[in-house]
Length: 429
Image 1 (cartoon, rainbow, N blue to C red):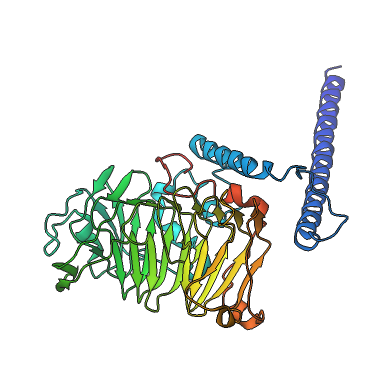
Image 2 (tube, rainbow, N blue to C red):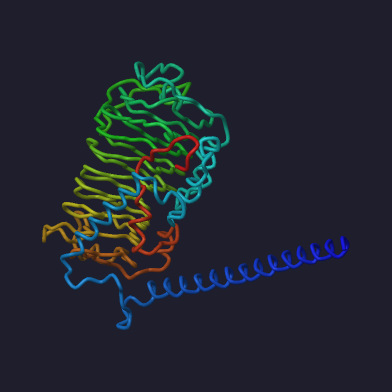
């Protein structure tokens, strides 16, 4: 009797195990089928978005009968993006490859240097101070631009060796003279609230491998006619600086990411004199008149007038940015630059005379009509229009293509976290 009972119990247990295995196999098969179907549908959706926009059979479920509703819809989308940003939503899986590379890691603050592996575009090989030690800025002072004391930002950036610069606490740094950076430096403001404001700002002259991430740069003033240190072994006389937020000249492998910039005396970011291999990404720009940059995943908001960017010579990839305000024009150029605009959202202002996205500066049409400027898969709203030009030389646009553009319909989500982030240790940023 006891043997029969034991046999029955063992048989029942085997049946339960067999049932669980069968159910798990079935669920796995169903899950794989669902994933395959979703991928197939997504592929069809992407194909339709890329190839079928001009097809009369294509219908958009979000289309509106009244075009005047579009600006208010975009404003609502921006407001929702701001709310998501405040609430910490969409920290992962936004489709923004930079954010998705590091922001999901709750222990990001213990692995800060992994950020250097998340770059995109022309400046993707910038490593900053990844390969050497950390430097902790503990003092916001800037009493002596010639002999900076240890613990302040100026002392850190002029060193000859690579450094990954972080900040001990929240601080506002008022620079007496421009902050001249040496090669292989990262300024990493994550986890604290750092402002470089109300004085001189940042200069990146004839150096390489610079990363600036997560700081607020605003209210920059012209300074100069003073001695300023640029390395441990050199200081010299500096003429008047224009008051740019970040001035880049003669430099390469530069990555400016997730900063908030506003209200500078001259440009917010100025890249000139043969600077190359630069990525400007995930920044938030407001209240300004001009800038000269190559841009991706940025949000250009209120108070901007023109030059977002202003391009001279060279090749410029303007990709997946959100232009919600301008007063004169968004993208300007002179001296025959190649401009490749892909997957951006352009919302024109109410002014009927300021609907054009583009402007050729101080150039006659018989000259600029040969310049290669194109718009691909951009979303043009509220009467915005992009004036293309040139013969569309493939080789020229190949040199102005740094990454794959995503659909303009996803720009609101991709740029929803533009600007300096509010990161805290132990949490996804």
